[in-house]
Image (cartoon, rainbow over all chains, first blue to last red; front, side):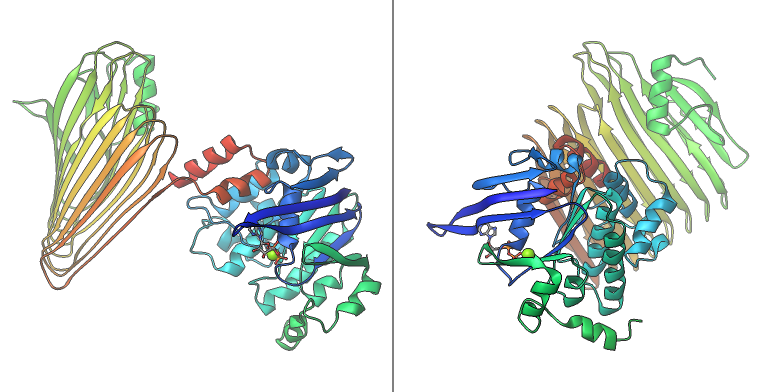
Length: 247
Length: 308
Ligand SMILES: Nc1ncnc2c1ncn2[C@@H]1O[C@H](COP(=O)(O)OP(=O)(O)O)[C@@H](O)[C@H]1O
Ligand SMILES: [Mg+2]
């Protein structure tokens, strides 16, 4: 379970203080899949980076499974069970997809186990397992590898930042299945997905809307989703996906 | 083969991946003497008369054979210059594994300067692997100054893999190549320097024949107070293609000077250079840390991958 209390993140930009996050309080209990949505620039990625420890909050606290982790390092948080799929995946010259999956799994994953994670995100595993995670991969391929590494971690809290970005319509169906499976096998873990996609919002237990650095609304999916349909927060590309031929 | 001690055997494993006497032709040099030599029916190794070194004659058409010529030095104060000449016959296709390991626990410098010349006849292909390695905690330095000359006749080709990851205090590598029509040269250099080490690498590649090509790529890491210079010059004297690239990571107080040089003397010469030097990207460290590695472990993974 993740508990954020009055979490703030202020930066000094162009000679003045700017509140990127302004007192966010929310809880993501175990066995829940929460989708965070809201307009671009609202502070969603910043929230994820604060939870993973990449940025340090200027106020408030973060508790994870009962422990105060506000000052814990990125490595310690990862080892406590927080996994994070970046919005913009990172490229590495010389590291192969298999290497990255092995680092993520924290053990010497055998090739067939590694391939299962790639297949789950719709990549033909044997074509990718030995590829370098470098500029030769397309944005969509990198994005799916990024998601596969988080699956390989089997974490207590998995955070995905706009997993749909850069993924083509054919693979989108596949991505929905990834999250449906995660939801089904959630057990004592929790999942946070940052997304604008109606189809991903539809998998959520709960939806949190973040706007201008604060929680605008939060509640069960059935309550929040109807308020979002047709607004800028929910993009209906899934409709196109269906028409685009994904079965 | 002459009995080698434990340290010499360890050096042999480091530089030539040798765990026993190699198959095929070989010449093992230890502390200035031959510690073992074998020729095959296609590859003849003959010691030189006037200077130290060997001539290696590879018969035309020789395929799937290898030559190992490792050098190990464990005697502080020993300085040697060795001349090795390779004559590779028409259409032969062989692997040559060289390499030098120095263990210096004394207080005097130990130095090996290997002068290698390669003469490839038309259509010949050589894959050349050279590893340099140093160990030992004496105050004496471990010095290697290899000079390599490559002469490529029509349509011959050479791939060179040069690796120096650890323990060599001072190195000045000079490589000169001349290519005739249709010949190809590919160089992959991987280098890591530590402490106060200094590594200088100078390439001069002359593309003299129509359709010749060269690809000279260096990946390197300079740590601590070390210094590297990568000076790679390609001369296009005919319709040809040349590419040189230096991709480097600096850490601590490491310094790198990259001097890519191109000279086009023919209007159909197409020459490209790329050079990039920088520290490890923060987001790469961060990504691996979110996967549970410490910063030091993340650094190690990134560097190992980069130099692989
Ligand atoms: N370290 C920072 N310094 C200055 N501005 C920042 C910093 N981090 C984020 N921002 C700004 O904060 C706003 C929210 O960014 P972000 O969290 O990426 O929003 P979202 O993911 O909801 O689109 C953006 O305007 C962004 O430019
Ligand atoms: Mg974002």
